Length: 289
Length: 324
Image: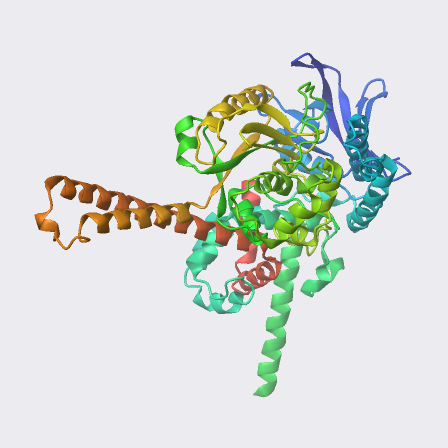
């Protein structure tokens, strides 16, 4: 079992509609087993016993702060069923909570080679539907009866699922994603900070318009774009891809060894690239003289 | 053959419908279920209720079997459920011009059982292409959306609409349509089915509010601009009737004629204003959809390079660090 993430947290017990904290000291662990499956576990720090263990498939669950509570309460929520696990953070410094929360979400959404969970849940749905119609009154006519025969349907669906499975093969992620304590791209490109820089940016407009869908844009339009949810979503995805090693840095002319999966190092690499470009330009100019 | 997740947004759905070559239909988000709000949106072809999916809910209501006049498709793949809910309304309203592709599909699949109808939809190259065109660009993320954030909950969609004078609930995860009772004419213009569906949806909302399940309500309606233009044409016609058909000029008209003219003019002004609002809304939707589909990575990279050239990159990083 490979440990991907560990931090101090207590667990909580659900009693009807109430959630009560278990006072014991514990550990919230994300581990990966030999089969490559990711588990979320809760371990009693005193006894060492692992009391809860849930396998979590990619894109199956999210980890988020519980808004209704004043404490540092977080929930691991499964998207496709009722399962919920509540935790209360026991790490000494609350300032790191948000980062831990992000880290958990990144870890439980690591791509696995064959994502069997998607196939399983789809099959479950289809089989149920097939069974139900099996009980329905046939409308008469042999053709319709055959169609209602589950194996025939599943054969067609296997084809769809096989194609789905292929497209689910992700790039390999690394487990270093959570090691970026620095700012995200959204933090760095906060509109408040960036907008002032866009004034007097008419020359930028020319260089950038080839990358924008509508071509020529004004600084105001660029400002508008950068504040739009769609753009910021892409920034978030970019940050995530950077941190989890899924970003191909070479497309930017950046040597991957220069970056340590943090946004800050990526930006520094860009800075270095630009400065190197300046120097070589200057050298060329010097040579011309 | 995969379907991507798309955003549940009226602008997305409206353009999606247009891309499937359906004419004269738009989607509006409803924030209130009160009858006045519903009434203003008429003609309403159907309502779509979206909520976070929770299986295991017990529902003992009987489903309608073997009703050939209703197009009911089983939901086969999760990511396509928005499109399927929209189709469940479009395919069941004869007054809508659903275009050649959907008409052909409706004809082809009309005698299929629900699962096969669902498969037919999912095998449709045209529909899948239109749907997937709203997926976020994926230069670096595999087809399946891996990024977990609050907005990526799995939503389920249920449609409500009248067919042949009966109000139905169409849920692709159930065996068949659920009849909610007779509702008069079931015309898109009629308030009767809206009055009937309101408490049904209200009950769901109350149930989900208790468990803090997020939901949305959308209405599939006639294109507003078309409607307003039709109304304007009607008013112009009336105006001509009053003031000029029989050769008399306006001044010599009776007082009531003048009054009516004034009312007509006021109405024309109001409708013209409404049309302007619709134009602006569609323009905004168009911009948002372009943004959704465009890959901004090249822009981003070049933007960052310019910031670096202007030596503004490091200061931005520092400012960001100070906040965290």
